[in-house]
Length: 267
Ligand SMILES: [Zn+2]
Image (cartoon, rainbow, N blue to C red):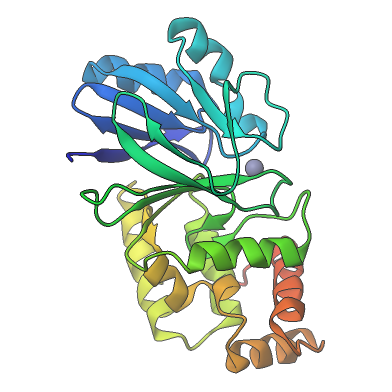
C-alpha cells in the first residue's frame, strides 16, 4: 500500500500529521485549519477523515473550519469531551481510515490528559507501522502530566515502548533539541544521545523536522523510556540528591525535574 505521511508545521512548534494515499488524505490533530487547507489545495487532495489524540486546543482548534469545508468523520478519544468527534474510540478499538483503507488500532495512553489515545497502523503491507501519539511520547522526551499521574504516564509509555522497534513515531511537537539538552543532563555519556544531538542540530539548522523518530531509537536515548536502567536511576539520584529506588520513583523525579529544567548552554 503506497502510504505517505508528512508533518505540516503549525503554530510555533506543532506538527499536524497528514497521511495520504493517492488523492485521499487523513489528518491528525489539526490545531489550525490553515496549513491543512493549504496542503490539500496545493497537492489536490481530498480530506477523508480526521484523527484526534486529545482535547487540547492546539490539537482540535482547526476542527470547526475544516469540517465546514470538509464534512468528514472525526475519530477521537471516547474519554474526553470533544464536541466534533463523530467516532469515539478507546483502548483496543480497531478501525479503518476512510479513503485510505488503512487499518489501525487505538492505544489508551493517559497521562498528558486523562483520555489521551494514540493510533498505530496495522496493515501488513505498511511496514514499519506508523504511530500517531500526540503529546505522549516525543522525540527524546515525553509530554507533561496535566491530568494524569506519573504511574499512568509510565504505563502509557511502556505500552508504546513495547511496539515494534521499527515503528515510526509521529509526535505532535518539535521539542527535540530542548529534549536532548535535558536527556544529556540525565545521561551525559550516552553515545547514541551525543550522536543524535549532532544529527538533530544539523536537521534544525536546515529547517527540517527531526521527526518521525522510531521506537527503537527512543529506547536507546529517551531518558523517560530508560528508568529501568540502574545507571540512569543512579545518575538521577546523584544529580538531584534524592532517592530513585525504582522505575516509578525515577520517572516521577525525572518528569518533575524536566518541568523546570533550564539547559546550561543554548544551542
Ligand atoms: Zn496537549
